Length: 286
Image (cartoon, rainbow, N blue to C red; front, side, top):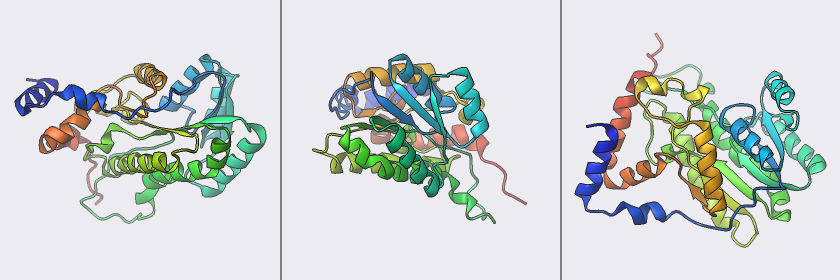
């Protein structure tokens, strides 16, 4: 019996009908997907670049940011219609500079997609010497979302825009081999919910995109560990459909099942993800 079969059996034995749960995702206004100005952080590769190219194809003006100028130059050479801005979301000064430039050069900003993030396997059962480095994922994945949103929120309110925060299905159940990354995604999910409430009546749509594992450089070891993933093309396809349907919490691929399993059999799903990811935990430093 494979992992999906186990999930099916548990759902049937629980006596729950999963359909209402899967349909109970928040819905808001349909997001306009053409003729908008869109900023995507971490848009020079992976998920961010895939969305940038799709938004460009739909007739939007798209600005992507990234830490490495050389990579941005390659992206610009290959996709000249994209705008590129070097900016590190872990650096508050660079976020402030990015916001100032966007307000000056792209005053019609309509969509902010907080996508920049990193994730690495960590061994947290032993002490480390680099305590500052231990927080790198937090600074980028959480601090970058909060600071960039704050820096551009007034412009987005003026333009009645949309904020898309990329959290993860790991907000529901962690991959224990990536404890800090998983925790940051839970934090982004919680922050996004609070942000949506506080912006009620302000004319700003707040969307939480919660992908499962996606086939990118960051998840290259997942296949070896037996953790299934979807392609960036499939992620983009499902997300665009969900945005057109007005969904405020988007759970592509297996994300819905992970959310359901957290409710029906939390110990089982947590143990399964630990078994699958345990080989990814690096050895403790000597």
